[in-house]
Length: 178
Image (cartoon, rainbow, N blue to C red; front, side, top):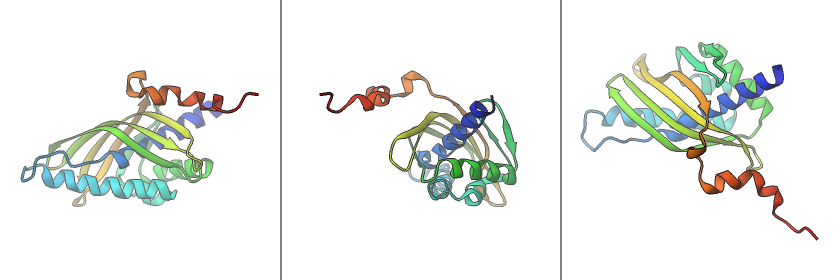
């Protein structure tokens, strides 16, 4: 129902933030791709800062004017104002959320396009996991700067998780029983 749809939207929004923490320069020094990778890394830093601060407008500003955000259930939000509204709803529902994305792959395709895929984890303010999932991002240049052209959230695969992450939902079992 509506609650599951909202939860899916919120989780997917959170996964978008994964690209923020995920961006890293992967090209060897002096390569033709070095500058795009560095610029995308800077975009990632702005994206993460906006997400972690709960700043919906700054988050949406990382997208192209007609950028697209596609949730895990396939719902597409087009344009910065729609993306900002989605982000605002998430930040109100999960205040103080932070994101990490240690598993990622950035491929600079040309001087004006790049693709990134990875796994992101969003934690609540108390450090517990809110959501985790795979994502893919298409970056492009718009008005002489790198922006997110399209973000798509996907479900996480069991192989994406470490042994510790598989057991984390059982953490409540730890403690004194007698």
